[in-house]
Image 1 (cartoon, helix red, strand yellow):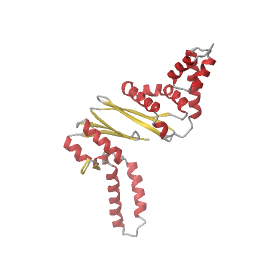
Image 2 (spheres, helix red, strand yellow):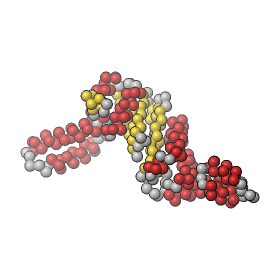
Image 3 (tube, one colour):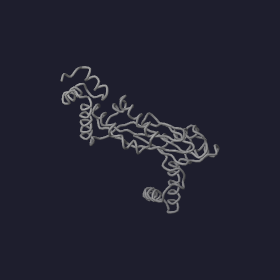
Image 4 (cartoon, one colour):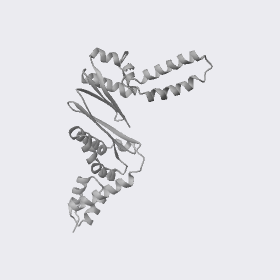
Amino acid sequence: MIITTEMVKELRDTTGVSVMQCKKALEESDGDMETALILLRKQSSASAAKKSDRTLGAGLINVKDGADKTAVITLLCETDFVAKNDDFVALVNTLTDLALTEGTDEVSAKAKEMIDPLVQKIGENIQLGTTAVLAGSTVGSYNHNGKNAAVVVLEGGNKDLARDIAMHVTAMYPRFTTVADISEDDKVKVTELFTAEVNESDKPAEMKAKILQGKLDTYFKEYTLVEQNFIKDPSKTIGQLLKEAGASIVSFTQFTV
Protein backbone atom coordinates (compact mmCIF):
# COMPACT_ATOMS: atom_id res chain seq x y z
CA MET A 1 0.00 0.00 0.00
CA ILE A 2 1.26 3.50 -0.79
CA ILE A 3 1.86 5.58 2.34
CA THR A 4 0.72 9.11 1.58
CA THR A 5 1.86 12.37 3.16
CA GLU A 6 -1.67 12.87 4.49
CA MET A 7 -1.57 9.52 6.32
CA VAL A 8 1.78 10.36 7.90
CA LYS A 9 0.51 13.78 8.93
CA GLU A 10 -2.63 12.30 10.52
CA LEU A 11 -0.59 9.84 12.55
CA ARG A 12 1.91 12.53 13.57
CA ASP A 13 -0.90 14.86 14.67
CA THR A 14 -2.32 12.05 16.79
CA THR A 15 0.94 10.93 18.41
CA GLY A 16 3.33 13.88 18.19
CA VAL A 17 6.27 11.63 17.28
CA SER A 18 8.61 12.26 14.34
CA VAL A 19 7.62 11.98 10.68
CA MET A 20 10.10 9.15 10.14
CA GLN A 21 8.70 7.13 13.05
CA CYS A 22 5.15 7.59 11.76
CA LYS A 23 6.10 6.65 8.21
CA LYS A 24 7.91 3.52 9.39
CA ALA A 25 4.96 2.46 11.58
CA LEU A 26 2.55 2.90 8.69
CA GLU A 27 4.80 0.90 6.38
CA GLU A 28 5.06 -1.93 8.92
CA SER A 29 1.28 -1.94 9.39
CA ASP A 30 0.57 -1.78 5.63
CA GLY A 31 -1.17 1.56 6.07
CA ASP A 32 -3.54 0.49 8.84
CA MET A 33 -3.81 3.47 11.19
CA GLU A 34 -4.90 1.53 14.30
CA THR A 35 -2.10 -1.00 13.91
CA ALA A 36 0.40 1.82 13.40
CA LEU A 37 -0.81 3.44 16.62
CA ILE A 38 -0.33 0.16 18.50
CA LEU A 39 3.19 -0.18 17.10
CA LEU A 40 4.08 3.34 18.20
CA ARG A 41 2.67 2.73 21.69
CA LYS A 42 4.84 -0.37 22.02
CA GLN A 43 7.85 1.61 20.85
CA SER A 44 7.15 4.44 23.29
CA SER A 45 6.90 1.96 26.18
CA ALA A 46 10.20 0.34 25.17
CA SER A 47 11.82 3.76 24.78
CA ALA A 48 10.64 4.81 28.25
CA ALA A 49 11.99 1.58 29.78
CA LYS A 50 15.43 2.18 28.26
CA LYS A 51 15.59 5.70 29.70
CA SER A 52 14.08 4.88 33.11
CA ASP A 53 17.44 4.69 34.91
CA ARG A 54 18.60 8.14 33.81
CA THR A 55 18.96 10.74 36.56
CA LEU A 56 15.90 12.92 37.14
CA GLY A 57 17.48 16.29 37.87
CA ALA A 58 14.59 18.63 37.06
CA GLY A 59 10.82 18.78 36.89
CA LEU A 60 7.71 20.83 37.41
CA ILE A 61 5.17 21.15 40.21
CA ASN A 62 1.61 22.00 39.29
CA VAL A 63 -1.08 23.03 41.78
CA LYS A 64 -4.79 23.46 41.09
CA ASP A 65 -7.45 24.56 43.56
CA GLY A 66 -10.99 23.24 43.62
CA ALA A 67 -13.88 24.38 45.79
CA ASP A 68 -12.75 22.52 48.90
CA LYS A 69 -9.59 20.71 47.83
CA THR A 70 -6.29 21.23 46.06
CA ALA A 71 -4.45 18.85 43.76
CA VAL A 72 -0.67 18.75 43.43
CA ILE A 73 1.28 16.90 40.75
CA THR A 74 5.06 16.75 40.38
CA LEU A 75 6.39 15.53 37.04
CA LEU A 76 10.12 14.82 36.90
CA CYS A 77 12.52 14.95 33.98
CA GLU A 78 16.25 15.22 33.32
CA THR A 79 16.69 18.89 32.38
CA ASP A 80 15.07 22.29 32.95
CA PHE A 81 14.84 22.67 29.20
CA VAL A 82 12.32 19.82 29.02
CA ALA A 83 10.51 21.05 32.15
CA LYS A 84 9.65 24.19 30.14
CA ASN A 85 8.57 22.26 27.04
CA ASP A 86 4.96 22.99 26.03
CA ASP A 87 4.05 19.29 25.77
CA PHE A 88 5.57 18.59 29.19
CA VAL A 89 3.64 21.49 30.75
CA ALA A 90 0.43 20.35 29.05
CA LEU A 91 0.87 16.84 30.45
CA VAL A 92 1.39 18.16 33.99
CA ASN A 93 -1.81 20.18 33.63
CA THR A 94 -3.75 17.17 32.36
CA LEU A 95 -2.51 14.98 35.22
CA THR A 96 -3.43 17.67 37.77
CA ASP A 97 -6.94 17.99 36.36
CA LEU A 98 -7.27 14.22 36.59
CA ALA A 99 -6.12 14.25 40.21
CA LEU A 100 -8.57 16.99 41.11
CA THR A 101 -11.56 15.27 39.50
CA GLU A 102 -10.78 11.57 39.97
CA GLY A 103 -8.08 11.32 42.64
CA THR A 104 -4.45 10.27 42.87
CA ASP A 105 -5.13 6.55 42.41
CA GLU A 106 -6.49 7.27 38.95
CA VAL A 107 -3.42 9.36 38.17
CA SER A 108 -1.12 6.53 39.21
CA ALA A 109 -3.10 4.06 37.08
CA LYS A 110 -3.04 6.19 33.92
CA ALA A 111 0.25 8.08 34.20
CA LYS A 112 2.50 5.59 32.40
CA GLU A 113 0.41 5.38 29.25
CA MET A 114 0.27 9.18 29.17
CA ILE A 115 3.98 9.70 29.88
CA ASP A 116 5.54 7.06 27.59
CA PRO A 117 4.62 8.77 24.29
CA LEU A 118 6.17 11.99 25.56
CA VAL A 119 9.37 10.14 26.48
CA GLN A 120 9.48 8.80 22.93
CA LYS A 121 8.90 12.25 21.47
CA ILE A 122 11.26 14.25 23.69
CA GLY A 123 13.93 11.65 24.37
CA GLU A 124 14.34 12.18 28.14
CA ASN A 125 13.44 10.09 31.15
CA ILE A 126 10.13 11.41 32.52
CA GLN A 127 8.55 10.03 35.67
CA LEU A 128 5.55 10.87 37.82
CA GLY A 129 6.70 12.32 41.14
CA THR A 130 4.64 13.32 44.16
CA THR A 131 0.86 13.29 43.80
CA ALA A 132 -1.50 14.66 46.41
CA VAL A 133 -5.03 15.90 46.91
CA LEU A 134 -5.54 17.87 50.12
CA ALA A 135 -9.01 18.72 51.33
CA GLY A 136 -10.53 20.76 54.11
CA SER A 137 -12.91 23.58 54.93
CA THR A 138 -10.29 26.20 54.08
CA VAL A 139 -7.47 25.29 51.70
CA GLY A 140 -4.90 27.67 50.22
CA SER A 141 -1.91 27.10 47.97
CA TYR A 142 1.12 28.88 46.58
CA ASN A 143 3.39 27.76 43.76
CA HIS A 144 6.72 29.50 43.20
CA ASN A 145 7.85 29.04 39.59
CA GLY A 146 6.81 25.38 39.54
CA LYS A 147 9.77 24.47 41.73
CA ASN A 148 8.59 25.11 45.28
CA ALA A 149 4.96 24.88 46.32
CA ALA A 150 2.93 24.55 49.49
CA VAL A 151 -0.64 23.75 50.47
CA VAL A 152 -2.11 24.86 53.81
CA VAL A 153 -5.34 23.55 55.32
CA LEU A 154 -6.94 25.74 57.99
CA GLU A 155 -9.76 25.42 60.44
CA GLY A 156 -11.43 28.83 60.24
CA GLY A 157 -9.90 31.81 58.49
CA ASN A 158 -10.22 32.14 54.73
CA LYS A 159 -8.47 31.15 51.50
CA ASP A 160 -6.44 34.38 51.38
CA LEU A 161 -4.98 33.66 54.81
CA ALA A 162 -4.27 30.05 53.87
CA ARG A 163 -2.56 31.21 50.66
CA ASP A 164 -0.45 33.77 52.57
CA ILE A 165 0.72 31.08 54.97
CA ALA A 166 1.41 28.74 52.04
CA MET A 167 3.59 31.44 50.48
CA HIS A 168 5.38 31.84 53.82
CA VAL A 169 6.02 28.09 53.95
CA THR A 170 7.71 28.12 50.53
CA ALA A 171 10.08 30.83 51.75
CA MET A 172 10.81 29.63 55.29
CA TYR A 173 10.76 25.81 55.04
CA PRO A 174 9.20 25.01 58.45
CA ARG A 175 9.42 21.39 59.63
CA PHE A 176 6.87 21.47 62.45
CA THR A 177 3.50 23.15 62.94
CA THR A 178 3.81 23.70 66.71
CA VAL A 179 6.36 22.81 69.36
CA ALA A 180 4.07 19.97 70.41
CA ASP A 181 4.59 18.39 66.98
CA ILE A 182 8.34 17.98 67.48
CA SER A 183 9.00 14.27 67.93
CA GLU A 184 11.25 12.86 70.64
CA ASP A 185 13.47 11.46 67.92
CA ASP A 186 13.97 14.94 66.45
CA LYS A 187 14.67 16.36 69.91
CA VAL A 188 17.27 13.67 70.62
CA LYS A 189 19.06 14.16 67.30
CA VAL A 190 19.23 17.94 67.60
CA THR A 191 20.24 17.75 71.27
CA GLU A 192 23.09 15.36 70.43
CA LEU A 193 24.28 17.68 67.67
CA PHE A 194 24.34 20.81 69.81
CA THR A 195 25.66 18.99 72.89
CA ALA A 196 28.74 17.96 70.94
CA GLU A 197 29.17 21.55 69.80
CA VAL A 198 28.76 23.03 73.30
CA ASN A 199 31.09 20.47 74.86
CA GLU A 200 33.93 21.77 72.71
CA SER A 201 33.95 24.96 74.81
CA ASP A 202 35.76 25.24 78.16
CA LYS A 203 32.85 26.94 79.92
CA PRO A 204 31.46 25.65 83.25
CA ALA A 205 28.86 22.89 83.14
CA GLU A 206 26.06 25.22 84.30
CA MET A 207 26.88 27.70 81.54
CA LYS A 208 27.04 24.89 78.97
CA ALA A 209 23.54 23.78 79.98
CA LYS A 210 22.16 27.30 79.44
CA ILE A 211 23.94 27.66 76.12
CA LEU A 212 22.61 24.28 75.00
CA GLN A 213 19.04 25.18 75.94
CA GLY A 214 19.35 28.49 74.12
CA LYS A 215 20.56 26.77 70.96
CA LEU A 216 17.73 24.24 71.13
CA ASP A 217 15.09 26.93 71.67
CA THR A 218 16.43 28.98 68.76
CA TYR A 219 16.65 25.99 66.45
CA PHE A 220 13.14 24.70 67.10
CA LYS A 221 11.63 28.20 66.92
CA GLU A 222 13.30 28.69 63.55
CA TYR A 223 11.69 25.53 62.14
CA THR A 224 8.27 25.70 63.88
CA LEU A 225 5.66 27.36 61.68
CA VAL A 226 3.55 29.13 64.32
CA GLU A 227 6.71 30.54 65.95
CA GLN A 228 8.13 31.99 62.73
CA ASN A 229 7.81 35.68 61.92
CA PHE A 230 5.34 36.14 59.07
CA ILE A 231 7.33 36.90 55.93
CA LYS A 232 4.90 39.65 54.78
CA ASP A 233 4.78 41.28 58.22
CA PRO A 234 7.74 40.31 60.46
CA SER A 235 6.16 42.17 63.41
CA LYS A 236 3.80 39.21 63.79
CA THR A 237 4.36 35.50 64.13
CA ILE A 238 2.25 33.04 62.18
CA GLY A 239 0.70 32.07 65.51
CA GLN A 240 -0.39 35.67 66.14
CA LEU A 241 -1.73 35.95 62.60
CA LEU A 242 -3.85 32.85 63.13
CA LYS A 243 -5.10 34.03 66.51
CA GLU A 244 -6.27 37.35 65.05
CA ALA A 245 -8.21 35.46 62.37
CA GLY A 246 -9.65 32.92 64.79
CA ALA A 247 -8.02 30.15 62.78
CA SER A 248 -5.73 27.19 63.33
CA ILE A 249 -3.56 25.06 61.07
CA VAL A 250 -4.85 21.59 60.30
CA SER A 251 -1.87 20.74 58.10
CA PHE A 252 0.74 22.15 55.77
CA THR A 253 2.61 20.34 53.03
CA GLN A 254 5.56 21.58 51.00
CA PHE A 255 6.64 20.23 47.61
CA THR A 256 9.99 20.90 45.90
CA VAL A 257 11.87 19.75 42.81
